[in-house]
Length: 88
Image (cartoon, rainbow, N blue to C red; front, side):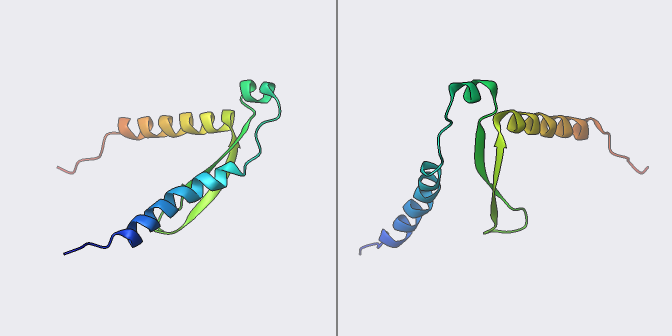
């Protein structure tokens, strides 16, 4: 009994290679000043909520990514501090 895995394995490897190939086409930052100051542009692929196949490409500077991550963290912490109303 043989198991044919070349199809699923090939598909998996293709899915893993596509983002790497897309990132390889991005131009590198031209100056080290842009990299050190946080103004270097970084693009990421984000999944669209409610869709299995949907995704979008978002490009922000490192400082903007950092600010967005900090804001999301503050939002989560604020939501966790709120006590739920309990009907008695």
